[in-house]
Length: 334
Ligand SMILES: [Zn+2]
Image (cartoon, rainbow, N blue to C red; front, top):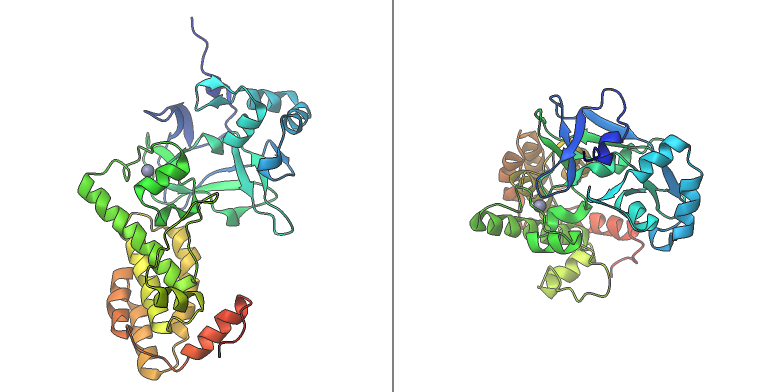
């Protein structure tokens, strides 16, 4: 008789709302065992261990020492880990790399902790959960539902922060596997539209923040997302008018919604900045439109009103540019 899969021996805390089982084309995954409402905590987990080094510097000896120090039951948890739910790992460093999360560290370099359970969640480019790094609580990380999750549905999160702005091909290159999520398996025409929307968001992000949201690892020659040199320079110099900043950001919100990527965490991350931009208009006719836009219920509604501002100058444009340049350590513009 065959042995039960080692993942069935992983210890899930009481009341965990998921079970581990095979996921078609994805090794093993986590599947909801009860309805999980939007915003609910799915799991908060402490790392099995943290090696205080950058992940590229972690050696086999470092990992061996960390595993040796674990109490027996935790050591067993680690030894249950399998490559994509299949074969045992041949190197401990690989097991670490495949099962770790970055732990934001305000006082120094980013460390990586091994999380046995949250590492069981598969990737999706349109996920139903989020592991926000803002919820770091004494080294723990937590996963929350970004929409209602039905019983039996696989729980997924997005492995890369910048995927909202990457085309399907760019996402797969970064993942180093072919994702089979609903966004990646859409029809050719839907796919084309999705790629266009994500590329447009990347361009709008550049125009608003003066930098690319997509960072390719290594010395890859990347075509600038904004081909027009004048526009690109204006963005890098934070010389984009307030009206354009406002409209671009609202357009990003609408595109995120169209892509199925808008959730509570996105609103919490982007919302305060949009409110602030809206409050910066000094020219009364502009300020009135911005207030009216923000009073609309939907992102599309806000965008529809804000579009009236497009190409308008504002009395506060120069001050906003000066403030942003100061924030980014750039000299005053002449
Ligand atoms: Zn995908």
